[in-house]
Length: 145
Image (cartoon, rainbow, N blue to C red; front, side, top):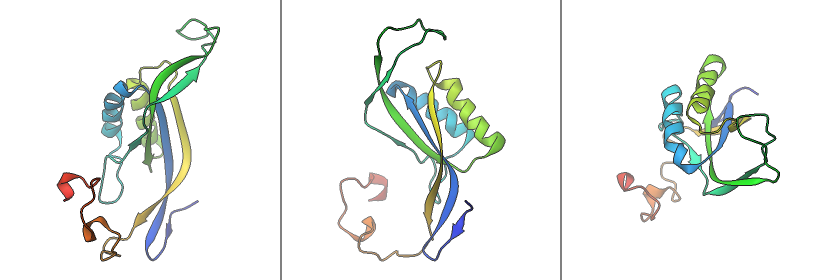
């Protein structure tokens, strides 16, 4: 589907990339990805999300570096998500950055075709629900207070 224009917003097409990894590896993987793609979202960049710690489960079949395991094993990890409009060689560079810095032999990386909405700058500025038009909430970063 192509990018579409609407009065209040526009829709962009790209890839949602989800990566499962131990939390300690996130700063290294994220830094490598940012060298390949600034992860821009309108007037912002370095836009990403990671979940709270969860549990990744798997059983090694013994064909790779690790010996086979009889039962399923568990690893505490997070899921990191980004959106990119990169294609072709640029997308390849981003994925290669993940592979180069991820601690696993076979990283869990999902590429999901996706769309995102982008606001039209200057519209709806007086909306009473915007954080700058209300008493400052706890979640507002200090730089934006």
